[in-house]
Length: 121
Image (cartoon, rainbow, N blue to C red):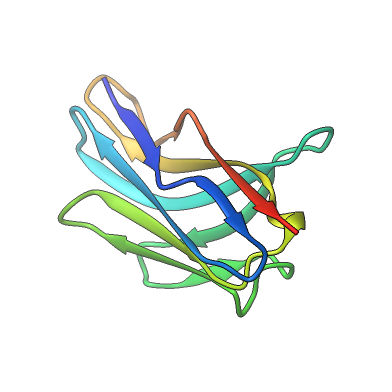
């Protein structure tokens, strides 16, 4: 059973920083692209940042220059360093990964349960 577990959310003042972590566990053959998404109240879930096995990363325009995604393949963990946080960054942040697990016919998308990030003005 594959699980993605996020941690590191919380309440922070505008201009502050937070670091999110997402650890994959369970029976896993291989992990492909991983990324962070967020969903604010009344809005659709949207991609924030992605990390590919080639080393390439990409970011939503709204977070470029402020957020940094990284991954530690040995720990099956990705991180999202969030600096210069703004109130509009307030959302539930979800981790997602393309994972090949025993019994699957191919890579599947797995999701974490989400972690709340609240930025006060």
